[in-house]
Image 1: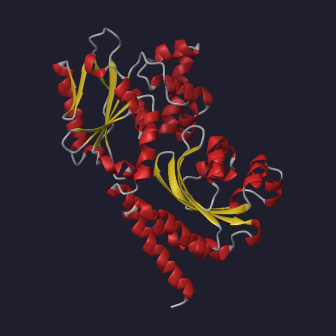
Image 2: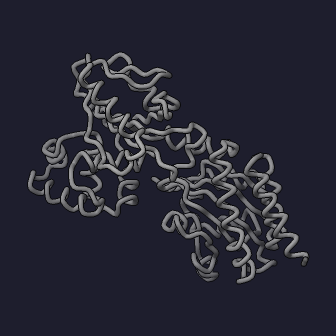
Length: 375
């Protein structure tokens, strides 16, 4: 067996070890760096939903002060980050796909980067773990070592399947705690209430927005046993939707219509959406959720970021503004009045939104918006 083959096997072994014990990720990064002739490496979680940022970054052979400065404001200017956000399903990314060397010499980011570090070239292996959320490893080379060529790209391409499986295993077992923390941070940033229920309808997670809402004193009761509406008829409908989402065929049926929960305060009813949590959301696995319940308050002016809506569905700015208002449960006429457009114009824009999101009804659209942006 060649030395190179020995190194590859050691990398694979360490990746799976790190999947079970996150303290071993630096060791896995070091072995990857040794294999590919790299001087530094990072394990990261990328949030591309609004302004790109890295809620998780584990570093190898980088100055912590440099990384702190990078996280403090340079992430959105990094051409590689911008490329990754635009290409979340591209497994392997390297400099030649992103930027030329001449462009680097004239780019504000690389001018800043060169004052902190002699690393010049980058090779990335990534996977998409949730809508607009990616995780992966980046390998870095100094200028003296030269850029990554075909052999190194092929090596990482071969290892990518093992890297993706290691990350997936770690997420499902809950052993990649820092990644889980990053996902929790993303959920906490969401302006709508996100509740996760297990297979027995018990509440296993509520994000910050849910905790801030006056739910328990205004028509809804939350406890470890689940979610209950004070109004019996409405609660029966809510529990029926949860039961349907828990059924084996729940994911195959059309998205449920919105359930409106009356409020004792007299304010407009809460809008509640229920959906099954599928295996594609492995990043939520520590909570072992089976159902996601999303609650919006029509009187709450906070809305999903317009950039997130545009990026997720390819909408125009005008369409995204309309979709953002509708995501709160507002009526189309109310949305038209707020945007100062005619009802006919609003209907025309909504038709385009339906086309781009492959939906047919307003309730189905809102369900898709909230499910995609929240989970």
